[in-house]
Length: 575
Image (tube, rainbow, N blue to C red; front, top):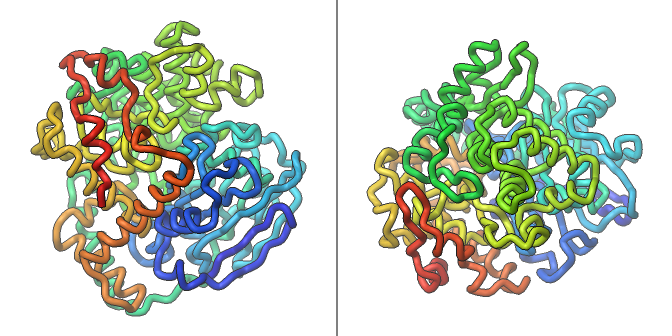
């Protein structure tokens, strides 16, 4: 167990034994605890006092399936608060198999400095001058680095948006095919990486130095039972491999919860053209790949490879949130254009959610008409060109709203909402408003508890039970993000027997007892650290509210508004 500490100011790299305060945790628990402990909350997110930390989940590098999840943490230039952004691909498994608990990047290189951190199969790390990589988009960068370092490596990198230090810049990482198509997208952490002068981290995937398990047989038995449950579940075993996360387009649209044309409506008349079923058919007809394995140790295979009419690769994976943000949110029903926009965001290094919503706000303000896919593509290309307007789009929807003096800007703590309108699913209103991360669906996805089609029992138009549901889910997800289990593999812990297997694996790895209470305490540790940091950064209870549009503008077709009160929101985390 070690930290790799990188000082970009001094150009030094050293190993450190993991301090006692951070032993036994990983992922989001580690990134948020470390940021809260060591980063001045009022610092400039793009200055030398901010810290950028990369931490595999606690289960990464173990025999458990679907655990190649990496948490990236820092103070966010988008929200001004703490941020953990989560990504799959191969990097978490690669780091964990080298016995690396976290990479901690401090300081900042001189302006215009460009460096790569290389970690070999023995876990030895070195900073390499990468001036010849400056300005490269991510796909070209990966090809260049792999020609030097070999194919059996994982690359985590930024594109031009990160180098420009734009607030919606992502950090991209490679999938099993070596493409930089997996994104730690939210919160603008690519800008922090760019500010530090770090262009990429390249990690050998040949490591055999993973931390030992205290009780390997017990761990493997529980992991085997967990995997069996994931495969047996209809959602993770059948629907996701066939349709990917795009399976959500049709039911969310039917529920009137698909934000359309900058959330002016809850249903999109072109939804069938961009649904998971349509996407799967097009991919199949063109010779692309459905049921594609994108992440290390995955048994769900929810990824896909979208190809053009000639069968040429366009992007991987085309997912629900991007189909929404580049589709319904901007009034665009052209799936090929959506796929092109997804590729551009990965290549330039941009969060597809924030970028799509930024384009939607610009269209809503009258800059271009809704549905103009060519205009959307041109706007995103402007980001890579470094134009004034491109930098505006790259800084996210709040910046676009300020520029146009436009009042309809669906952001919370500076970060855009995701693909579930809170007026049609009241529990998502609570999550968007109260998550320390800003507008974030993964922090507390309560859609299943609200929609009858998903087995939900809450009245989705009522405030009753919504604060409690969001609170419990946010605490649970904080723990899930800490152990590094993929969100889609939570079907393995959905039953009492399934979550008990998680507790058994926690004990079998650490050698210490682990209980339901310990799981709850893990989630509490994370949320308390994040909220403490945000309070010191200047956040107040008023930051746990939604934009007025959600309270004042009824959403068609059901013409509902958010009914959870501000006072109720503020009590979500009265621990």
